[in-house]
Image 1 (cartoon, one colour):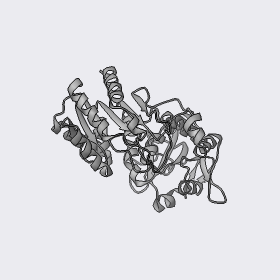
Image 2 (cartoon, helix red, strand yellow):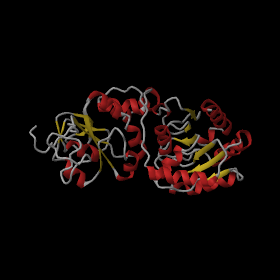
Image 3 (cartoon, one colour):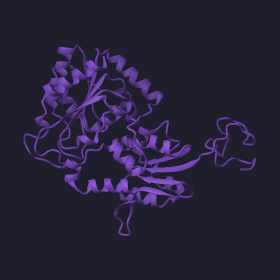
Image 4 (cartoon, helix red, strand yellow):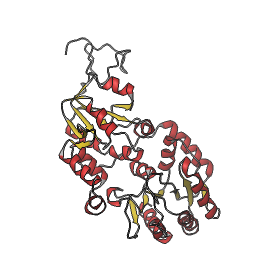
Length: 369
């Protein structure tokens, strides 16, 4: 390139000097973008976070690389300041307008979703992997790894019983990169860490501090463990470990949080409601977390927080705790099922006892001590 502006430099801004402040001519900080990669993964937030398992593989395969990630607004906080991302774009017309005029060496669509596949397919790309759209507007696989994932979604037998691979391993195959079981990570914003620290310190909690994440999202039925179970674990943590429990959840989980607090007999503390970034920072302060298969689980994994994960209607083998946790799997004959509604009593989560959860938690805390 000539001694004019270095348009392919990862530091180049165009409307103002870059962080180094000097002219492009002769700049010793010139850093070509290298392989330009666009990753499209829109939803759901927990899946977006654990899909970042593809980033180490992409970096290893295409170094130097410049990686742009497109996601929906609720997930932006989870990817903000990620050390393996160069750019983060919020899904929408503005992102499409800017990105569609660029040329990428590789476009990866990780979503089996028509919107995501259409967005990714509209980009100029030398190579593609993941998912695309057929002429009928239906989702298709663009490579062998994506074909495996597509087949899982079309067969309950394959997904529930035959597959033994974790979600991070599968998503790396979808992207067409090697999976070396490197844990996915999350960067916490300093302001969120500061607010979480102040919140936790004001409570003056006895250690170990265990989070009880009582919600589980609205998509699948019976995903949340019982309020009575969480309350019993809280009582035993205080009595047998001398520790504290912080009841956590999102805005839609407030009623369940109140139930656990009431049933705990004063042994649990209200964790309150927080914006997503601050919630993640609170999770990062815990000595351990007890949760169902939900976003808090993926945040804990990304932050390296020891976790007891309870599974009923969803598939435990797709979750990798990276040797920092224990899975408790319901023994109900109907599980897993991924049903959107369920009136079976007792439910699959009713089959999980507080003794089993507490014993797993106690062992986990002992290992970490």
